[in-house]
Structures are given as C-alpha cells and as structure tokens.
Image (cartoon, rainbow, N blue to C red; front, side, top):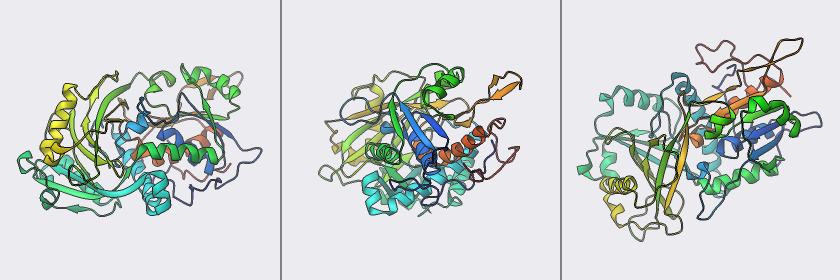
Length: 432
C-alpha cells in the first residue's frame, strides 16, 4: 500500500465543509463511483469531491429517521476511540497499526468541526470528556499500559490518568473499578451527522443513486464503470464485502444500545461518556458504554455477539436485560432512567472482518489481450467493525491515494505496515 498515512487529510486544507468543492471538477476530471452510503462512503465521497473528482454515490438506501430500522452508521455509538476499541476484536497487526494513524486523522477533523459552534450544531459533533475504567492498575496490564502510553503520545486533548476519576464520576464502589483515565473525544449524534454528510456531498456535486448492487464487483467492473461512466470504483459497503468483494472473511457482530431520556428530570444529566473495555470486568461479549447522544438522549450498552446476523433483539431479550442491569450496577443513577418511547432500542450489525479493516486496491487482475494482466480500478474500504466514525477520514485519506494509483494503472500491493510497505509516497503528490 503506497501511501504515507502519517500526513492524512487536514481540515480546511484538504477538505472543507463549504458547499463548493475545494477544487472544482472540470470536463476531463475522473469520475468515481462510490458504492455505500454509510459514514465510510460519505466521508470518502467528500474527500474525493474536494480533490476535484466527479462522484456518484450508490446505496441501497440513505439515512432515515423514525421508528424503522436505521443504517448501521446511525446505530453506532459514535464515541471516538483509540484502538484497540472498547468492543475489542482487533486481531490483525497491520490493521491495528493503520487504525492508530487513521483514527488520529479523524480525531483532528471531528475536533475542528466541533470547534465551530455553527458546524457543531448542524453536524451533531461535539467534544466531550470520555472516561475509561479498569479493574486493576493500568500499569499492571501490558496491553492497557501500551494503549495508554500510545494515547498520551497521540496528540489527543485533556488526558488525565487518575483513580480519583472513579469517585468524581460517582461510579458504584462495589462495581470494582480501581483505575481510570479520561480525555476529550468527539461524540457524534449519528442521525444528525449522517443527514449532514449526505446533504454536504450532494451540495458539493455528488450524484446520489438508490440502487442495490449484488455480486462480486470485480467480475462486473467493466459493466459498472460503463453504466455509471466511472473511471474507478470505491467499495465502502460494510458487511456486503462478503458478496461485493468476494471476501468470505467478513462477518457480523450484533450490537444493541438502549436509549434513555437524559434531560435531568430522572437522574443527574450525564454530559460525558463512560466506558469499560470488553473482557475487563465481564465476559468479552459484555461492555459498559454510556454515551450522551444529544441534549436529551443517553445511550447505554453494550453487547458484542459475533456471527449473530438477525436483528431480533427486544428490550425484554435476556442479554439486553443483563446489559441494562450491568450499567445500573456501574452507575446506580440509571435505575431511575426512562426509555425513549419513540426509539427505545437501537440494534445493528457491526461489519467486521477476520483480518480487520481492509483499505487497499483490488488485488485480483483482469485478463488482458496483448498486454497480459490488467490491474483492477476497484479500491476497497470496509471491515471497520464498530469503529467507522473513529477511522472515517483517515481511511478516506488513503482511499484518495489508492484511487490515484488505480487511475495510473499501477500494480496493486497488499496492505502492509509502514516498516514493510515497499513503496511509500505522499498521498497528495499525484495530481488530477
């Protein structure tokens, strides 16, 4: 993978929230088909539009409000996290190293958006205190100590490691928390943000198409490029990577969150996030995750159920009942919480992959005529699990670079760590 991810997208320099793209597409500008209308697809479309590309985004449906099932990107807790994240499941060293870079690109962009009162309001992005709790001293766990040291050196704001946070946040002393740290992190109202992102890319010139694509994109690449007049294709389809990328390593992890009223009338209004990493206090499928969604809703969770692909949970499901009891045990004020009657339970399927996140070009080659093998012009960005919002702009940065490689018909290379990448270059060197 030939990108220098250490630089990444910079707000106002490489992308802008203004309706007009930073670089206006001309008659000869390449056309890119983005498949997927979630946060990964839309942030990628935004980066490409401001780069001067003509973009079409195809999705089976767009973000919606109401009581019906919402997009996975809307169901997400959308608390920015440094990897490995609270819900765990990070197993691949290459993906983990990349994710530590991608998440910081996203952190700085979400932070810049939240810094503007107007943008914060219209996008649903705010910077709030994010608090993490542990059953033992962080220093006594090599995994947690490494993560904390990486986090401290990453450039995040407001870091403080102090067991006194447990008392400050009124955590039940019987729960067993011994250590804690906190920092400022983006917390995103996903319903508001998804609508804002959709309208933003549309105003910047993206064509939005409702269509469900099926089958391996590689085997229909020529037909799709002809149908959408596209010079390259970006696959940002989450779980559909199983079919659209021919990737059998994709699998769902079902999650669920309860939505309770957080207006101060039933319990002290919670204006910060609190979380416990999977497997630290309970079994790996059970998490404590309290995140203020907006001014009146608090999300409480969570659960991780690998390979569960049915959205069949209810507020009476045993695992949801245990989840609620666990959160009440952690923060007893929640015993007085009222469910949001309009949308009490949010559930979705996190799009995981055995090798974790995939941001790379299609490695399979097409058969040529006289010239032999021909590189594909498909770029993949999927398998983000529960970290789509945290990794969004960082992955979009690499996708832009990979699209530029694909347009030059360069040979694709597999994802690799920076130490082993054979051909590292600046992702913004190539020009349209």
